[in-house]
Length: 218
Image 1: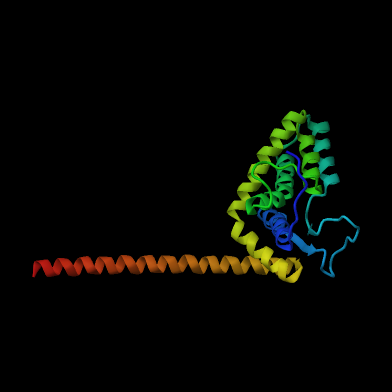
Image 2: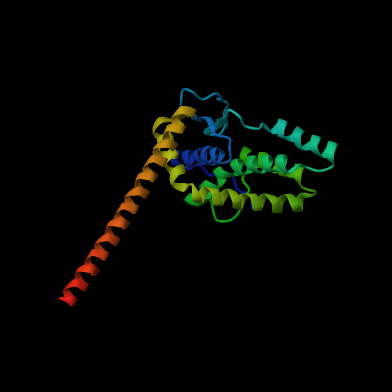
């Protein structure tokens, strides 16, 4: 299915870019900065550009990744697991924005082939790892499901980062790390609170049972 990616609101753009950043961070390529077009920090101003971007400090540019794949095939006759894993992470990160839009309901269910750069990059990279178009399409669909799974698991984090991005239009690495740390702290506090409440309930139930036993004995 081919469909132009739908950016019907700033919230959608923020979810899309936050998904790239959060899933990239999960896969070992944390964002250097996240920029919306309205921010004074944005670097590209050409008409028709995406309304948002994520820049990576240690990302694997398409050209460098392509050379690594081709060199592996030339020297070894196959793509090493290390390079394949790097390529798969690259693709999953690129597809995460589309997956977030689908999960939020702004794209229809199923693997949506958009006409945006994200999908084009993913398709080019996958083509280097596959023997033909049929294999490439299956491979992309499989990686998209992995991206969607990552997005579902990280959805509260993605929404939190998107909310900050919508309010501030720009998030640098330090701000991103602070958001993630705050979320982890809040999650730990919720966990310990739940554990404490569970222990309290168990203790109260045990005390009530002991009291009832004593009353019966009396």
